[in-house]
View 1 (cartoon, helix red, strand yellow):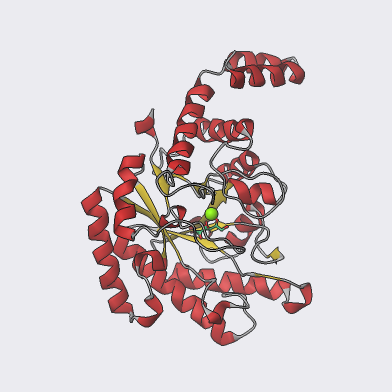
View 2 (view 1 turned 90 degrees about the vertical axis):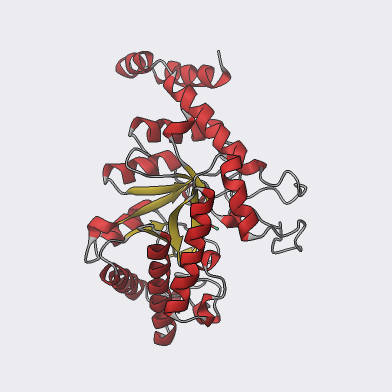
Length: 344
Ligand code: 3MF
Ligand code: MG
């Protein structure tokens, strides 16, 4: 079963534990050392921010960026790893304080478009055809700061620029309702897919659904995934977990609500997720309290939980489920699922 699914995570998922209220608590691990951990932990795919692959890329010209990215591709090949996607990091530069694509300053918008083209160059060099857009600062703290209709026009313009720049690239928008902004313009799967249909090539615009982001929007992650699957738009996932409406916690998959994780796995497995080349992507953070040595357990544990849930999903008595649905006995169905999760 492990061989049926390929798993991925980003190098940011192994981190030093700094948070907005306190300093780092663990030593840094270099990118090269992180790459060596992937296979050991059971992972085949690497998710990238553009500058995870090419640090300080704003100081380099387009050709130098591509050359550096090609070196990273060699490193990946050396470890037997594949790049899953590249995401332009548009939320740290001083020019994107007011947003990238939706900034009020035209120079800032141009920077965001140029940087996105460089991210596409990196994706080509790393041999992936997937760009992820987490629209971190494309929103407002106060509604009057931007025009929400114009913001959507600008997002379309920016995505069109990327689609035009490379006709092979697909774009997975990663919706999130808030954080860092008070209100994001693309908070849900429905918004992301609708945005895709305003672009010049909707066939190449889909979503990356993150469990925690759906929960933060008050939605059920498996239902969001079902919505995207109905449109054949679930390009990738960021599985994790979230304990209610608070900061984005990126907890280990299934660690808060095992049944909610079961429902996600059940849907993905039922609709052959992964068979079209998709990775089971994680976006998980280890607890700040974790010591240096065990600071990758959140990754291997999330993967293990996913695989155990695949087993559980496949051993569910689907005949019984259908029978209970036909009889509209959802109380008994509820008990069937709970008993199954309890192992009896
Ligand atoms: C933010 C996120 C990010 C994105 C990543 C890729 C740190 O809430 O989930 O992970 O997934 O930047 O775009
Ligand atoms: Mg994410």
